[in-house]
Amino acid sequence: MLDSISVNYELDDLKTIYPNAPLVKEEDLNHKISEFANCEYHQVFRGKYELEFLLKLMDLLIEDSDNSQQYIQSRIKFSFGSKLSNEQALKVFTNYAETSDSLISYLKQIA
Image (cartoon, rainbow, N blue to C red; front, side, top):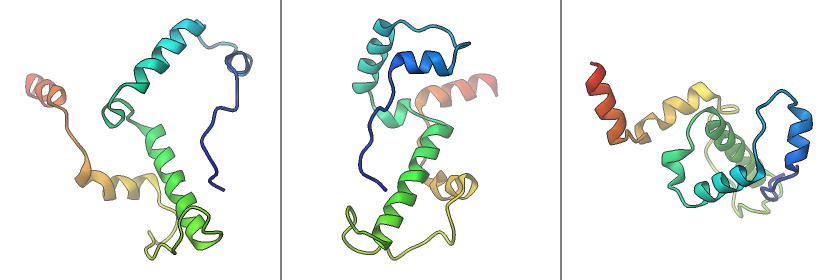
């Protein structure tokens, strides 16, 4: 069920779960959190975790519209056939992708 997004761990928990990970000072972590809070998310957060989050969120919204309608008051009338896979999502969202000027510049340099 989609209720909220919240942190359910402490930094010490992560250190216990991932003992071989590089140590990160809490001050550095807080600085990075502050940086992320003031950025254009769609330009900074990229990759498989963002796609995974989006697909899970979409699944939860569709499930909510089919069942409890706690967040989506009416039924969503479309479907991707079955659960949307990464491959299908990439095909669907490719037309909406943005290419930054820095990437275009880089590609011109190596071409």
